[in-house]
Length: 176
Image 1: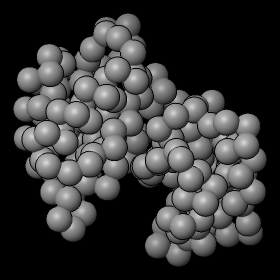
Image 2 (image 1 turned 45 degrees about the vertical axis):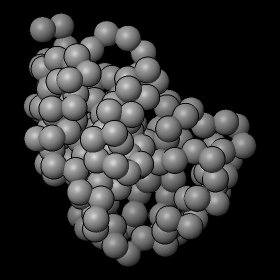
Image 3 (image 1 turned 60 degrees about the vertical axis):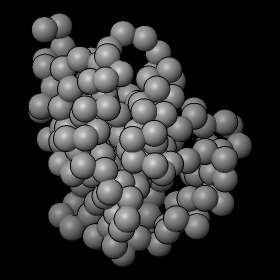
């Protein structure tokens, strides 16, 4: 799966039908999109980093602006959607998965965990980050500036785990 950073916000419009066409031209198979926020499903053999570069280049050539692309295998997305590092999520709280472009270094892990406070809790997972906001997402204490300071050279994109669970439901079951 490919997750596109900051698309369909302001002038950064990427129609999902056009994005699917780009993936088709790149030779990917079983292409679909989910909601209009840059979530693309596809099948392909090969390395995630190679797919990230190819998809990013194809999209940027088509749309004319930078489109940071994060590729994760279906199993990784299932893990993100079903992980419960905070236990059951209370009503009104929000659990995000924060995808990083490159694996976190030891220093980045330390900086990310240090962002935790009474309102926002951050836990580093296997490859990505889990972020609990003890309220609606718009009431977070961790804005883009805090994340940029913790990860100055490692772009991120966030997805609500409720949405990820719905996305996982669209996937073929493992082994099929």
